[in-house]
Image (cartoon, rainbow, N blue to C red; front, side, top):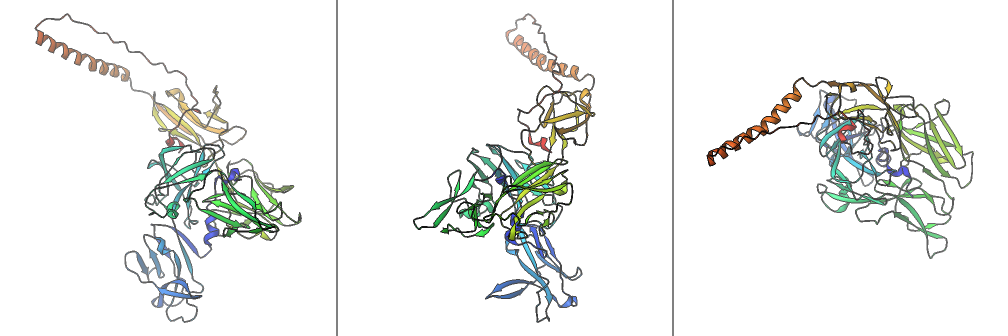
Length: 559
């Protein structure tokens, strides 16, 4: 069964598949990239090559600048610039001396990976909600990365987290897209979510690599139905001692779905027959949704699973990252280690230690828990648990993604408004927290006593000058609150109401007078004058604050 955390997969997954390392560069498709030469000889003898394998031998093909898409600058240390990057540019490059007949490119090879952006959709813990993530096909070398989100092609907000801030429900007519700051013209293809049930959800992609397996052009739209749960089912065969593995899902499988198998957390061909005594663990994935690992029989293998694969936590709070494992030999003395893989340093893993009060390990039976206290933004990373000889080896199966967020107050439509407008305040986070959070709102450091359970949204309708001041918010049970943000409320100009009354009166009286004049002309009969009185009702301000936890909110409020 797919654990609650299988609602996501960290972008580091692509690191393990593609092998991004110290001499690798991952750049965005359509952008430009500079590759610097490492040769030591005089510049005049330097040349650029691509490296490929042919008959188990390296073959080097020289690159020639065309002055447009490919440029080589002798003035800039013989740097090669490739513009408008394409999939075909994915290759191994090197710069060497033409007269070096030995290993011309042995040390200075650079692996260039070309990434595109895709909005990925993951099932959330709620039965009929999903999460969105702005994903790249390899960890981008350029940092820091700022993600921009769009709704129906309109700018929504920007943030350092790739996760969309809200859990969303089925909105077939609403499309979502993302881009990187500085590359707004290279947006990910738009997606929409429909048919969202407790078992499945359907995602429609405008175009992109998610549709590439459907034997249709990538520029055409396509739809894929995803399961909310994936599990490996072990079946007996007619041959004694042999079992067959099947990847079962919570909704019918279609040709559009791509199923991937893993053996001991590494890519594997689909297993046809497995011995009951097999010491290996197996798991499968439908697209980017992973099942738990299983042993063929009982606990006869090393396996590692996680209670949650995605965690969104508030800065200053504590978090437990829990793993569950099986050890066929029950050797409690085997090494058990947690590794941290930062988004900003994708090529290196960092083993966590227990010599601080902030980070602790503790195990209960076949569970191992990593506890991090007083969370800060640097704790945002992927966490991987390893046991025994598996420690230090990087798998293709993702671990647990932790995103640490702070709280920020957002005003909509603006932080400067006029009396009488409707103003929505949002206690904003960088990733979707659970829905059962209780919030406390403050005005000038004084808590607002609202009658209803307070949510992350606060409505001032209509707003008045009494509402002006510094607002902040916090989650109940946590001490740290957001930074204060000022709301400025401008008074209406005197005479505004009187002017409105006069305009309304004129709009009614003038047409009436014209009608009566025409009527008199046509009939030449003097009609008695009719006086019309107008009674305009003054709208009372009503309740000062309103909670909109049960009302739909415009996505512009998220920023």
